[in-house]
Length: 471
Ligand SMILES: Cc1ncc(COP(=O)(O)O)c(C=O)c1O
Image 1 (cartoon, helix red, strand yellow):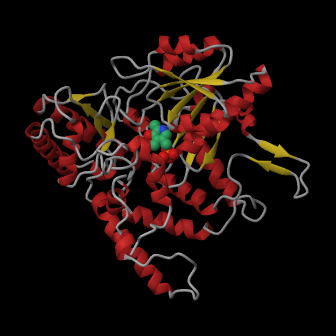
Image 2 (spheres, rainbow, N blue to C red):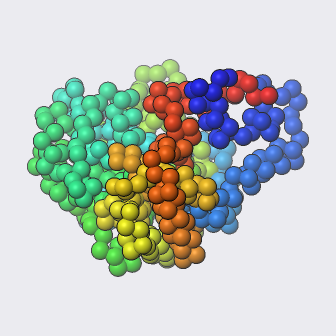
Image 3 (cartoon, rainbow, N blue to C red):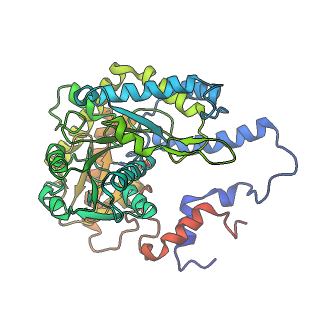
């Protein structure tokens, strides 16, 4: 394969196994011995987990406690094979799911909205967001006859909303942000028309971790008679505990009039295994628009809560277990340490690195930009020093989304020292092209000089196909 597309470098960096493992292009003739398969899988896991376990990774690895993962996996094992559709055989799925929803409703102050607060468990933040869009689309079609729906979101809202709008035939309108990097409420108001089915705010958003002015958005939604979804996928399981620890966190949950739904991810700061989130609704009447029923199918009366058909009972059981095992004291303790670490990072940047500017007023995620330096050069050097940050664009910035494995004074001190060194590197190499850029989910963009926009489809192919020349 020629390297002028950047794909070779991409594969080398992201997929070393094409060179040093056997590539299966067909199911093996005979089943492999258990010990063999386990040894191979454990080899990959050990190699891949090392960096995260050292606390040098921003975002995504929220818990870091392998004992916790192990217990959750034991719970998962009990129901891994179970399809939660078969509630007659496996009624515990109803207990687990209903109690997850009840516990999340309590955490998000559902009592302030009355006893009708309810929800569903989904497969992750994206599914929660896309499902919310679907629910508002159905509601507006049935109650208001809206056939050309639009939704207004901050430019900083999570991109899964754009994906969902694309899939569901909804027009997405993007409201700009203010100098404080939160949504400009009056600009949002200007984008609302008679076909607007809902608006969205984040608590906090992916890029900068900031909380949009939810009380003002709530007033706007109420004045227009439309829904307000709060994307708490990231902050939903953290901000309540930061607030309980005594920090002045702006209101964003069901205490805010006008908030009609909230997404909060169990598989992020809920410390559950990957694969679950919650989508909470202020009323059962709103949630009812999410239900799909089809009585005339030869396969039987069909009733389905959401996108998925079969779902594993293991994930629901282990998510329930994560909430119980962690407990209020566990969430509170982790939140305090995460908040303190993020504030120490923020203070270190503010006091020691005048070349950098922290974005907004962060709680648990510290994003920074620079007016004078190329932040992607800073990221190149951080990467060389063993850190995996998230790179952003528009404007170029980096963020450190602090999670439990990062939340120790040692990690914070080491990070600040390396960030300082990386700023010096960026100064010394000013004007040179950075090797990394900003690609969501990755620690940087391999082949940062390639035209990544033109190559994005090719990158997705490369991540899903067996490499053609893997020899
Ligand atoms: C604010 C926010 N919303 C939604 C998502 C999407 O969540 P998921 O990756 O579980 O689909 C993320 C992911 O980090 C996020 O930060």
